[in-house]
Image (tube, rainbow, N blue to C red; front, top):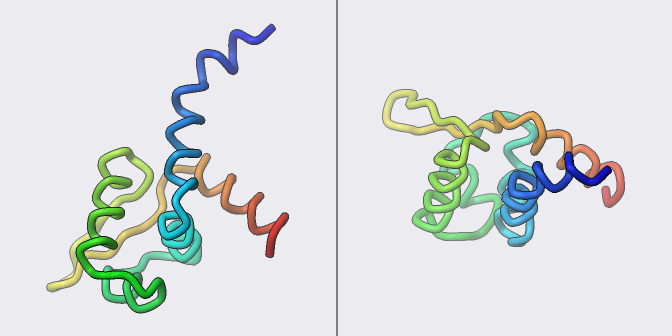
Length: 95
């Protein structure tokens, strides 16, 4: 009966861990509206470029984001459909 959730618990826990930090949650919400570069993220979030880059790189390494270089800028975009769906649900509940 609980086999499926037990098997998927590590993935769910990873997603919830990403969402559990206020600034990471905000970063993901911003990216849910489309690709952004680090400058756009830092300006909107009011955090340092190094912190925004650190968050984005960690999430990229976990497959939540993808990055694309355009000229001198690197743009980040949400790619994990499950994270996108969780963010939609959170927006419906809280926004």
